[in-house]
Length: 98
Image (tube, rainbow, N blue to C red; front, side, top):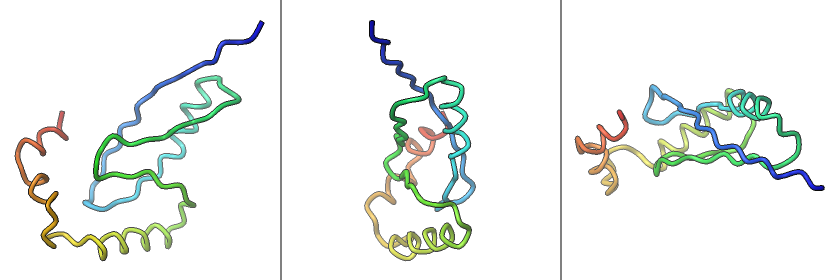
């Protein structure tokens, strides 16, 4: 008889201090996988926020600073981005506080 496939969903909540920031969640994900007891399979990491991203790269301090700098250069605050209007709306702000 075949073993049933085990599926696990778990949320990791991340708080940031800066508008543009890279947060290393590797230890969080490793701990979830370890606790799950799953030893063979696929781990999917995803973000539900429209202006957040998951990137896979080494967490080297210079690289992290370079990525943040490049994002800030390419997408400067106050450049007239349409999404800037949404971010300043009270409804949008309260959504992130719930």
